[in-house]
Length: 146
Image (cartoon, rainbow, N blue to C red; front, side, top):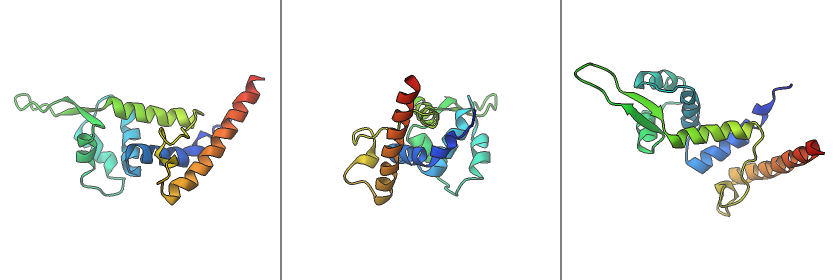
C-alpha cells in the first residue's frame, strides 16, 4: 500500500492551528510529546531547541491547559516534576492523525473557524482546498462501498 497520507498535512495543520489557537511550533511540540506518556521539563527543552525560538512556549502550553502536572517536584527526595499531555492535547493530536488517515476536516462555520465570514485570506484559500478534498474523499468512499 502506498503511504501518502502526509499529502494533506498542510490543510490539516492549518485547520488545527486556527481551530485551537496554536502556532506551528506548539503543534509540533504536542505531536512530539503525544508519544511520551510522561515527560520532564528537560525532555520538553530538548525538542524545543529545534523549534522556532519562543521563551514562553512552556508557560503558554501549561497556562492554556495543553500540558498537565503529573507529579510535582519533591524537595525531600529530589524527584523532579513530571508532566503529561492534557486530555485536550491528546484529543487534538489524535484528531490530526485521524484526519491524515482520511477523516474529514469539518467544513461548517460552527466547527471550523476557517469557514466563517471574517476568515483571513489564507484561511479562505485553505477552505476552498478543504472543500474539494472533502468532496473527493466522500466520492472515493462512496465508490469503495459499491
